[in-house]
Image (cartoon, rainbow, N blue to C red; front, side, top):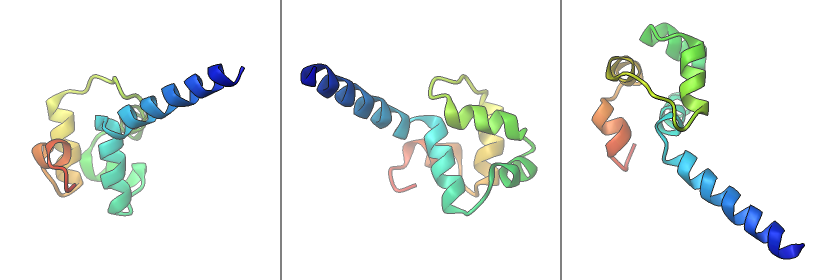
Length: 88
């Protein structure tokens, strides 16, 4: 029914909104802003491309602070700026 379709669209938009605010999405946005591929970020950070992909695509992925620091440095930022500064 139309009501069910509308409800599904609303839920989908809410999930997209949650993902946009997720750690992985922020990493991906910064990486793409710098025109880096996952492979480029992997080489620069020392974090495997598979791990980077997993972080970017799993909003509830648990990641160590050490890994986040490596990624942030490779993205020419800090963990604080990457995740808590709205301008990044």
